[in-house]
Image (tube, rainbow, N blue to C red; front, side):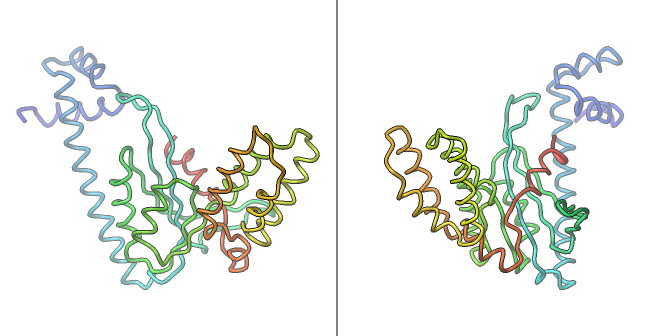
Length: 268
């Protein structure tokens, strides 16, 4: 590369804090003779080395977990994407995965739990590269429960790679869609809240099927018919993942709060 090891170290150090054009100005004010493209190449080269080393560590850890018998223990998996403002490409989606076990969930108060251990996987960019990273951790695990929102790419990946897993659409996302529709349909606030409470209770005790029926039986409103039909279609498509009463009976989680909080704690 023709650049001393000290200069490369300086480029990596400053290049991770500033955009490469600004890093060029700072370095040249302290030394001389580098440009933004050189800084970019050096940072990307070492970044790739670090990622390759991390992947090697991941493979070894997964192998050890598999050998120790951990493969048959229940693991929860939550996946989500969120938009982040990057230095060079403006807004870009970062995918985040969180893997944890029931034994890692600790009750810290009557209404609050904490996770004492998790494995995180993240990737800024295309979801195909992200799921390759996720597969490192999941491919040798035999008892998986996925909890996620309704994003199509997530469920397509799970169906293709882990068809025997338990798949749950996050209850709170499911209810959120119902609340959005109810806000349009019921102008009277008391009537709206009563209907939402009734439907929410049915979701938890009987699953999504009675909600689909309740939506179909609502009287027609020109302004809300399209929204209602879209919601029914969404529930029908995911109804096997919305049988919350069955998951509760098995003692499973039905919410993806763990991944929502991880966006803030891990990425932001």
